[in-house]
Image 1 (cartoon, helix red, strand yellow):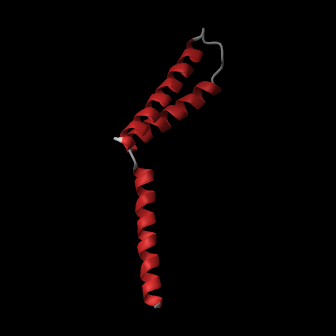
Image 2 (image 1 turned 180 degrees about the horizontal axis):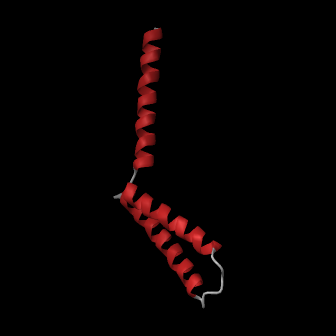
Image 3 (image 1 turned 120 degrees about the vertical axis):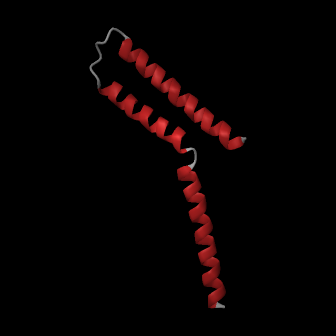
Length: 79
């Protein structure tokens, strides 16, 4: 009886590990691009503000790109 319980626990752990790995490794290039854009957003936010409106526009574009990447990831997961 103990052996069955141990085997069941191991199978469950393996299944959860596979699911967690899939979630982390899901679309690694899209996730990497999103990470880079998030870093760019932080850098732009930390930059001095007087850039003739270009910093503000760059922030808008970076945020729009982040949104598109998230939409693409969601779309791919559904199809």
